[in-house]
Amino acid sequence: MQEIRFIPCKAFKEKPADETKLGFGKKFTDYRFVMDYYDGAWQDARIEPNEPFQLDAATSVLHYGQAIFEGLKCYRREDGGLQIFRAKDNFARMNRSADRLAIPLFDEELALKGLIELLKIEKDWVPHAEGTSLYIRPTIISMDPFLGVSAGKYYKFYIILSPSGAYYASGLAPVGIYVEDKYVRAVRGGLGFAKTAANYAASIKAGEIAKKRGYAQVLWLDGVEQKYVEEVGSMNMFFIIDGVIVTPALNGSILAGITRDSILKLAADMGYKVEERRLSIDEVFEAARNGKLDEAFGSGTAAVVSPVNELCREDEVVRIGDGNIGPITQKLYDTLTGIQFGKGEDKFGWVTRI
Ligand code: COI
Image (tube, rainbow, N blue to C red; front, side, top):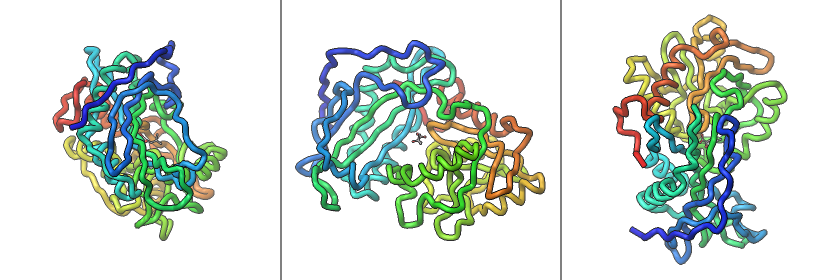
């Protein structure tokens, strides 16, 4: 495996003074891990100062969006130690995204080694306050200064770190979701399963419309019939219908969330009935009208487990539960974060100590 070079910083940033006001993805640490792709191989793995990149105005990623990324977190345990959660799964998914975007695959072991070395250097940036963590953003962008649409010869892989709090300003307080029935996020055969910039770009306009109506996020329906629930863009969705935990099955246009997979495994292990299947939005609203939609929540690395207490579709608004986080959602949140922060038993072997 390649050696990882170290290039020291000349000046260091101030760490956040108030860890209760971190927000999400606003501040970044002193160092990043980087590798460059040229001459047909990923080369020059290094940890270097996290300074602005210089990019030619023609750089291909700025025009054609050949960009993929991941999101994971480093958690501070009660005993002060640090740990990451399912990092190997993130790098495996990143290579699946790379394949779809015609980006050269990278060595997942080297990326993990680079991340762990970076975290050891930046350990003091992992916040201590309740519910905070160091958000990790691995990214690959195409770097060719060329306006032709084709696979490039130059790519950059980097990992940056951001001390962060809750993704939603409301924290664990439930959010309302707007069901989008005009725009679609992805279609089968497209990029939906990949964690690529384009999927997020496609979501911004609808997100702004939803926000104006007072909703935190958009619930996307399938791109063909606009009938079946897909995901929320920053989270996968779960509905508890008549005691059964239901989430849309992976169909090629939904992101295979690592938190989603963890929730499915934890819920089954707790003895709940879990279903991954096609779920129509009509079924969700019908269940709500009949008092059978017990709870709803989203899941994601940034959002963790985020309760949903209201759904709006055209002019119909349904409220879920009594407005507070539901008991099953709370139990799943507590169990998942218990493992992530090192308080609960890691029976699936998901955690790596740093
Ligand atoms: C994550 O949950 O890590 C994501 O990448 C979603 C992003 C919108 C914050």
